[in-house]
Picture: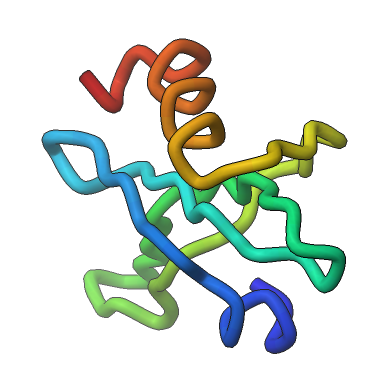
Length: 81
């Protein structure tokens, strides 16, 4: 996730198994956007060498309120239910 997005995260929605999440991010113009992330873990010879959240390709959707962004995220990503 880009550093400038991290400072503007308003809400985090996680899947039940905590392997996916959606960040609702405040944009500079007062609107909101979604950042979809997946937890990854790289193991080499039985040892964890890297792990963390990786952002998936961004959608270009922009929402007027946090509530609208959350409703749209829950409709689009069934794993949030």
